[in-house]
Image 1 (cartoon, one colour):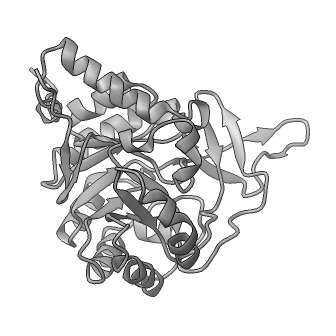
Image 2 (spheres, helix red, strand yellow):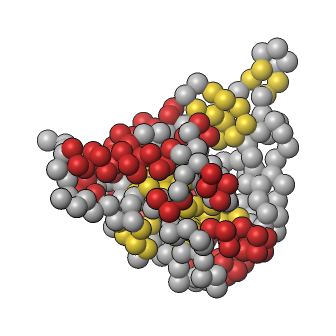
Image 3 (cartoon, rainbow, N blue to C red):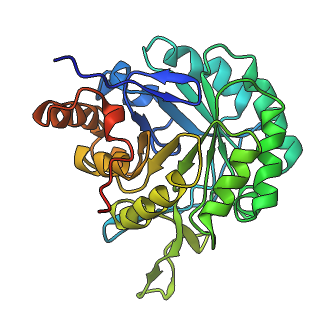
Length: 305
C-alpha cells in the first residue's frame, strides 16, 4: 500500500510533515553534505531582518542537561544578501523554502515581508514574534495578543504567500495569542519557540552567556511544547506546526497525534545533522508497521477516553 505523507500548510502542499526549525539549520545548503535536502517537507532558514545583524556578543551557546541555551540574537546576512547569495543554492532542491522573518518595529516587519513577497524561490513566510533573546521587537509582539495580531495583520497586508506565525511559550495564555494571530490572517501557527533560561559558572560566579539569559531548547522542553501544541490545536481552525525537543520519529509522531499537522526539527540538527531526514523515514516506517495509509490520519488522533 502506498503511504501518503503529504500535508497542506495554509495552502502550501509539502511532501511530508517534516520541516527544519529556523535558527538551527543555517541557510539550509550547509546541511546538503549530510543529507538530500529534497527529502524534507520544507526548509526554514534562519531569521532574516532587512539589514544584516551581528547578533549578540559571545559566549552565546551553552550546553545544558537535555538541551542547550542560546543567545545568538538573530544574527543574519540581511534580506538582500540572502536573496542574492543564499536563495539560489536552495532552489535546486525539491523542497519549498520558508523564510523566517523578524523586525524591531511594525515598519521593519512590513519591509522584510514586502521584499520577500516578490521572490519566487520563497514559498512562504514564518513570522517570528517570539524570540526571547532580543530586547526589542519580537519579545514585545509575542507576549501581547493585541500586538501579536497587529504585526500579523501588518505582514499579511504585504504578502499573499502562506504565512505562519511562530509563538513564544513565555506567556500566560498561549491560546489567546494563537487565536489573535489566527483572526489577524495567519495561515498556520508554529510553536513553541525557546523558553527563557540562564546558566551560571560557579568558578567565576558569572552568567555563562554574555547576554545573561538565553533560549532553552532540546528534549528538556518537549513536554511543555507538546502540551501547548495540544491546547492550541484544539482552539484554532488553521494548521499547527509542532516544535520543541523533537529528536526522533517517535517524538514527531507524538506531536502529530496531539494535533500538529507538521513538525519542525531544531536542536537535534546540532547533534545529528541528518536528523530531519531520519525522522521522515521513521514516520514512514511507523505508518507501514501500523497500516496507516495517510499521515493526516494521525493528526489529532489522541484518545482521551
